[in-house]
Image (cartoon, rainbow, N blue to C red; front, top):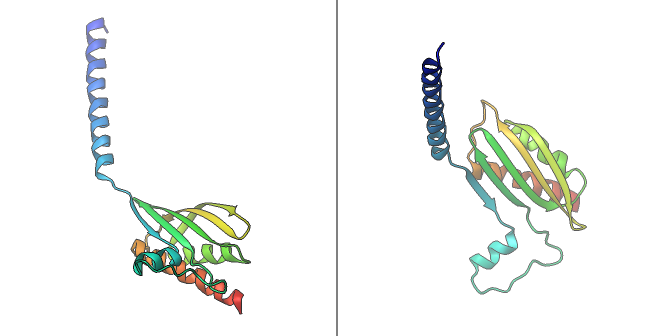
Length: 151
């Protein structure tokens, strides 16, 4: 091969790579990340009741804070909840019931009475929930566990 044909092949290859980069950038621009955040009940009360200064009573436990982000088939769950026995097992079993395959779990104490749980999961073929349904399901599972601990 002479220098001219080598340069010609290199130019064709660079053009091919540039086309691939453009296609990938277009696909990335089209993809969106969806997210939902369920705030604590005490914050909802303040927003819903306007100027009400009502604060949770000492006997009333605050609800968990759950954030869900979805990107393609990947799901990021961030949960801040009360620290009590079996909470992580309850969350993970609920996630698996919802047809999510757990990829990664991180748990860190948040203060002395709370946990910050981060779960990365992947949707399985049978997954059919909206993000709001996912949040409601996790929230109810956490509340069932908390209420059982109170009794």
